[in-house]
Amino acid sequence: MRKYFFFDIDGTLTSPLDSCIPRSTVNALRELQNKEGTLVLATGRLQCDAISLAHELGIDSVISDGGNGVTIHNQIICHESLPLVSCKKF
Image (cartoon, rainbow, N blue to C red; front, side, top):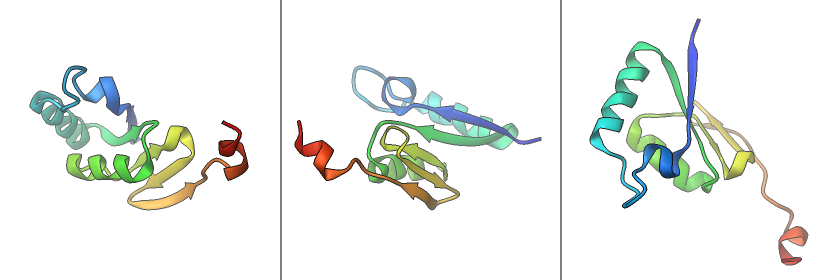
């Protein structure tokens, strides 16, 4: 049975002071991916930003935009933005 591991980016994978991902974290992610299962980034970041970071880390699945975007194996499954009318209210 394959295991799935979901990781937030900001403050979880990145260090809080400089927003960089420590080398030890990258190594741990790769080891987990090689031995255990599928890694998924789950973030409030925009899909394009999340995908860029995922590719750098060798991860091909992302839940982005606070859950409004889903990419699995580099294929966008869904991506729904807020309605423009709702955005204009603020």
